[in-house]
Length: 76
Image (cartoon, rainbow, N blue to C red; front, side, top):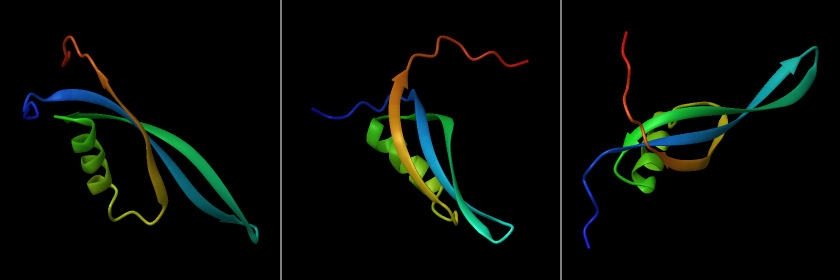
């Protein structure tokens, strides 16, 4: 069975690990960011996010990807 070429929307969570130096102390700050990504599969979306982050200097991890149904995008 071939993969569908219909594009869907996926809510993707990326965990980011930043090293912060302040007053001779080094601390790690962990944050989560959400991205809405258009793609044809979970693998496609994860690949797109990894490409987006390929040149960053901090550690990151795609921690979750889930398909969401968008009824309509309102543009104002």
